[in-house]
Length: 132
Ligand SMILES: [Fe+2]
Image 1 (cartoon, rainbow, N blue to C red):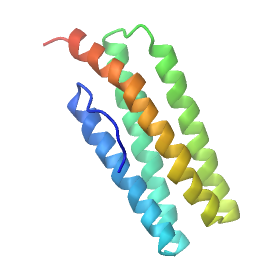
Image 2: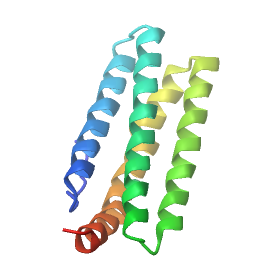
Image 3: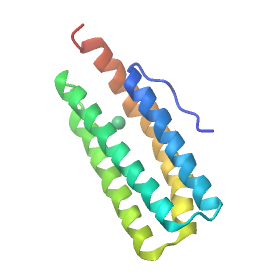
Image 4: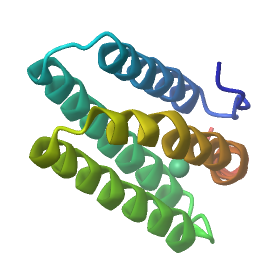
């Protein structure tokens, strides 16, 4: 179980729950020795989900002129680059241990940390500043 807070915007909470489920599904696939095509498809799904979720958050931040937008956007870009590189490395090396370790530790730590800090603050700001 991942321990992270609910934020003030519902679609963000729904997306976060979906991200957690996707990560778990991927780890289950890797632990049960699923074939590579299934893992590839789930990784594409995770990447696409993350891309869309970040884009939606960024739209909202811009719509309320969120002052630390560049910082939050910079973090998203960094994470997407890293995720894309990990997926590419997996497609090249097919290293189950490396992919599981990344999902198990780095992705967990990043996710919990990002939701608890940037997303939490950002959602509260958007909630307070968006037009009724
Ligand atoms: Fe975010």
